Image (cartoon, rainbow, N blue to C red; front, side, top):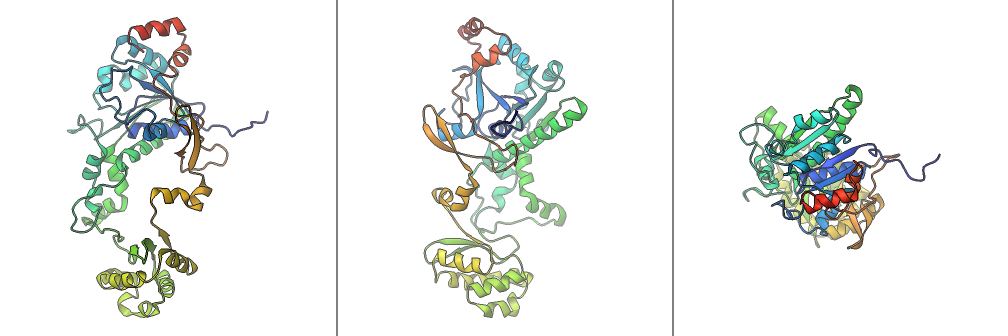
Length: 397
């Protein structure tokens, strides 16, 4: 039998999603977009004091984070709610949570409790600072992790003071690292038959994202400083003001430097001894940069981009978000994915940036309303509509 649509890579995987805000939902979104049956477990109205932290239910953030999921309303603070959850764990593959580390144990759904019900279960825990250690019970927030992980110390202009990134870098990264950990654990489970506990934190993820800046300190003992829009050790590479805006340039080596000088019609700079090599250009950046700034202000951005492209010099525009999605290459890549929502109508969401030739990610359903699939999910473990109605009357679902 020939399938009319590509297979879903993770359609055999069921995920119980206990997460909120951004890090955990990002992790579960990856799994859901590749076909996993993700059941978003939410407290009934009035039970969760953090309800609404991600904004309106039909707001852009919730819609983008929770597409492709089903929603189950369940009060885990009650014995009946916990027992129902553990019953769902029996047939699940993955549980994802981003509570403070002590919360899951207080609720009776820590790793040992889950494993006792289902030895194949994979628990993924995302915290602010780690499951153990002196900061384990602190609440984790993205900007705090950006600061503690070193990102804010190298972001911004020299002398300006620390600057946060314009997106939730630590939140998103920890969600992605958790998804990687889950996929590794699922692969290993195929061999061993056993699940395991996957752990990451905002702090660890932010440090890992520091990559060469972190290695620069660990290996060389150098403490990186903010370089603004200039590359930390390569020149010329950064932002240039033009006659009508700005653009990014990236001159990566001595050959590109020669091409760059031809593009800007300053061959004299190519042959100048003080700029002949990468090391010399970096050492003399305070002299070189003003010379280039003077040149780039003489023409418009589009003109410079065309000239640089002719010479094979990496360069690009600096877009606002509306300009990003108007770019023909962005349109060709299809990362703005159409979706239909019963309340919001036709809209577009941000797709997955990873393409698979046979089992690509898809957005098949919009973000659910709270508890939309409660009867459906509980019915699958044997509860009748009357049972679900009784649980609702008791505030358990």
